[in-house]
Image (tube, rainbow, N blue to C red; front, side):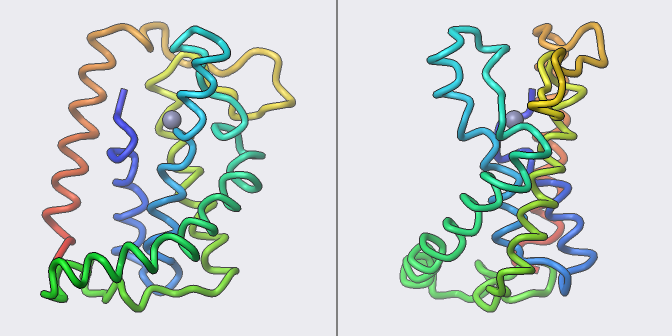
Length: 177
Ligand SMILES: [Zn+2]
């Protein structure tokens, strides 16, 4: 089970390859916001394996998640970036795959498509690592479960480790470069 930030890898690789099509921040936040629902859903279901709902569905990714992502990128990220630049003035900290992340696109179409792309990578990554995948919510009665051993500890640990290493490798390859 990859932890939330380790869902970033596909978004970052896609951004590095096709930077002009993407907002880095929207693709990154889009890949993480689905997990915002995990804690509140758990409090309702009381079952950690049934803690994913609309934000892990295609419908949610294209609506709620995209909205939350755009709000984060437009309202929160400017403050975060100002703070980052004060704390670490070296501009290389905000460089990724040759792009200056301070100049990341802010147009709504780019933010939306990037958020949607990031969100789709998240819910696709989740399919082989969880037993409860409501990706076609609300049009599916039985959430996807494609592997018989999802949610077993050894598989959680193995996939968690793979995504962790992939995340570190991607960050080392592109961040500050
Ligand atoms: Zn998730």
